[in-house]
Length: 123
Image (cartoon, rainbow, N blue to C red; front, side, top):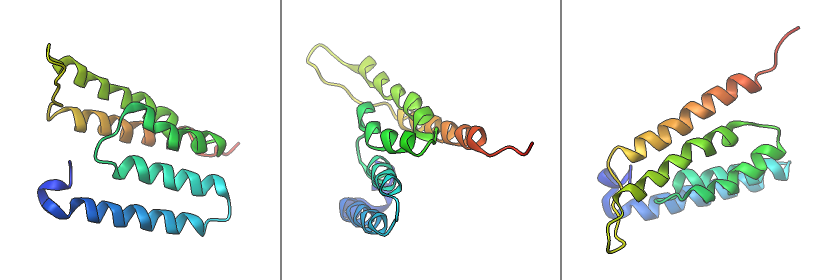
């Protein structure tokens, strides 16, 4: 949804190509945990719709690497459940324009904070 205004009908092809590129680069990584981390993160970032449980594709490799980024990012992705506040009696819902920036902004803040937490300290 973020790229669609600029890429229009080509959005799926561009995101698909980027996903393939991420997967190809990941195969060159010597540690399979980093490969899964790259693929899982690429899947989340490039997906047009992200449900909160999708974060498991990046969370598990992140934790296996001893990183906290997706652990904190997963907390922020829970905000995507706010879309249910628009659920009507017919079962229809529509995400509000502020929901994406709130959710992904929270993921970015979580990543930045995790980076600070995971930074090695000098005695």
